[in-house]
Image (cartoon, rainbow, N blue to C red; front, side, top):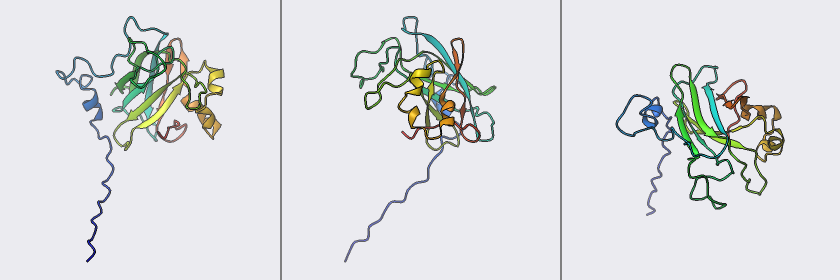
Length: 204
């Protein structure tokens, strides 16, 4: 007699829930005593090399309303284009730069903000150099899988025009959703989850 196989059913997907910012940034939410500071809250110190910049923005849902309980993480290379990672084989990254940051959106105005440095250029998988950029990861209630995108710099016109990833965006009018606005040393990068001017998200 042939044995019947019991196949497991796929479990339903789970959203991040309404408490993701509490679990990831407890000090921000006035839950103290676990960490001296929330992980990822500081990326630079007084010895970090490179051009200091502030990256700020807000997250909007499909109806244009602020998402006030999102968590944003960013990854980037140092000012010379090297990552602070064990898998970095091209050289030694700046030891005074973490290359990774985490920040929740504020409940009152929905703003996130990072104090960091302008990143250097890194090679694409085929060797072409990509334009300077910062990788973003966004999670909030209602988002089943964290969303990935990138922020590029408006003054890097020539590098942006030849960037291998930006060149792959079929609808060219959407490239602008990945370009920050600059005022002095502050870059504003608003993220739109759906609707008009929806940000380009990456399937990685």
